[in-house]
Length: 360
Image (cartoon, rainbow, N blue to C red; front, side):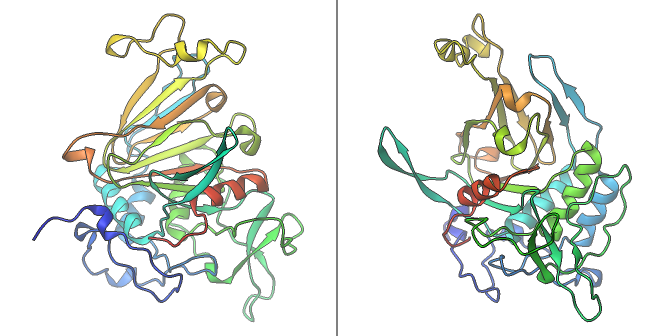
């Protein structure tokens, strides 16, 4: 029997919540869950499929085993402020979390068009994506029931604390609806072009632990799945018009190792310097009058936190990785946790990470 590529296991599914998805790969098969892992999956009108909660052994490991190591500060270049957890999650737990999320989250291969020189060009996103969350002008609240007469905000974005404890029970996501803050009134029909989705419990648990480690507060989880070494993301920075000044962004790697590359943005007053600053000499040495680029091999469980003026002055990317075996073809998941402040960023996230197509 010939070996199938990972992409061959990804087939679009209908939006019916009763549809059982095909497992991406046979190595994702886990043993039957213990009795304590029989919690019902998260469901919500905005979800195309139910999303299971974390198995108890992964949840316990995240609660009591993170951070696996204390972070190292990297600030030895201009305008650079990083925290590097190597690792944040132990390799064994990170690999199990990778398999769980790859199997259970709805992923999308988004297509969209852009105009370049007045000509429309179709773009096929070179990776699988999905996203959950909403900007801070809105929130999900629990719908009143007979047992709970007063609506209250869903505690999916609690303020970070310095302690790690078992996650507290939250109202089911299926009872939550989106409202404006602080009025708690239903949002305008025209506020969002795409339907925001609450962060599922499996990612909320992870987000809460990372908030405790970084002291930051996040309301969005963006998940990229790089199925092979051909999947990539080009140099970019995250727009401060939507995230505010000096945003804090945590980037967690799961699965196969990939290279995380950063380079300083060229000075805006010197267009000619753009080519010079993006060019390196032999053996990766920076050319004269440029800031040296950074290359970090991120393994499963590693986390980079970009802080301060990093987004204003640095670009980052995950380039393609060529090869015939090992991590060159092994899948990788990257989860970025960030705080969006305005509705325009919610629309942007869902447009380019969910779009209008079916999920895989």
